Amino acid sequence: MTPRIPTAHRPVRRNLILAVAAAVLAVPLVTVPAEAAPAQPRTGFEISNGARWTSQPEEQSFLATVDRGSDRVSVDRIGTTKQGRPLQLVRIGNHRPSADTMLLICSQHGNEPSGREACLTTIRDLAYAQDRSTRAFLSRTNVLVVPTANPDGRAANTRGNSDGVDINRDHIALQTAEARAMAAVIRDRKPDVIYDLHEYGATPPYYDKDLFVLWPRNLNASDRVHGESQTLAEGYVRPTAKEAGYSSGLYGIWTDPVTGDPIKQTAGDGQERILRNTSGIKHAVGLLIESRVDALTDAEKADPALNSRRRVNSQLAALEGLFTFTDERRGRIEAATAASRAAGFKDRGPIYLGGADNESPQAGQVLQDPPCGYRLTKAQFDDIKDELALHGVTSRPDGGGAYVPLRQSARNLIPLLLDERATYHLTNGQADTTC
Image (tube, rainbow, N blue to C red; front, side, top):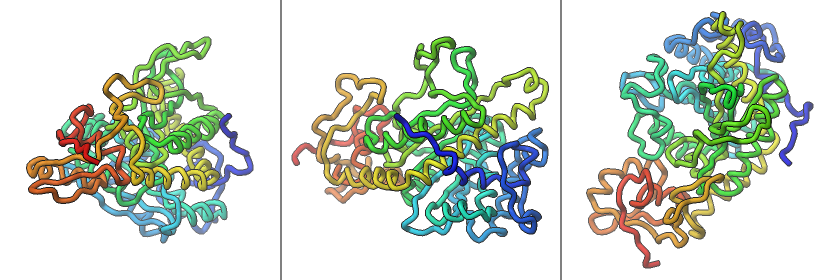
């Protein structure tokens, strides 16, 4: 049975929503001291009461103001898009090495803006909150936010980036500036939790919840990371959304509108190149969240701002569950992610080239006795050495090329990159079975 959230233990996210957002977001609020209010910026979305999305210049001004106004925030440029827009990482907290680290990735798809708006206001609310529970939370948690993971796509209102590439299908190949920047953050910051905010188009009556969620399904995620990810979804995010008045379900699964039984799966598989799955393989508790784009009522059809506010509100409700989960289960999260990172050095167990937690791998997709490592020619290594480094994969010189041992933290990822049988491999490494 998944745990319920005790009402008394749910102050953190609610205390983050400032009074300045009350008219726009209509969620439970705690007002900060009056003298702090004038320094707190508002997004373009808030200023317009949801009539338009925050523009890129407005975002830059907003983040600069928050950075100047709060000593617990820093904003860094982690990359640049093809069209010259900044990829930014916002860090919130005391940045203690012993603290847990949470990473929010907002709006990888540029035409899915509600997650970005929720992330921007959350950054501000964390930056300025003075209540004891939030301050205590930030003393033990490093919150990292990529507020706009696809700036070029957001500017053009397109799913892909300026080259038309779906960034959320590039977390193995790392061919886009956007995915490379995220990979570097994951490698260097080693987040314990990665939360990926998206939106979806409904298919009534089989697929039309306010929110859909899904954890890493890839079988190479450790059992404990997988378990905590499911608990985040089923024990925290979905119940919190329900309390806020939002329906929820599992992403990619059509259900019978009467019985609730699953009918078919249309998305949400275990492919490793999707951030939701990459997160689990890279030792982080992960969750995908999807808010419903389509208008729910005649009122929303008549007033697009009402539709936009509902989409952002539902994302904020889901974030409340995330913050509560991180606060209440930090010991279990730390144990799960630490064990996952250490497991590769033991160099034991099968590695999966296919399948998912709800789909058995096909014949030939399980390496029951994985090789000791992979040898790369000089040309192969030169071609992918940057990607290996971004993935945090270590290697050593081997003749004119390189040798990539499996005995390292990235063990379960390496065959997905180098084995010719893996669907999205970068090159055909020569398997070494002499160990």
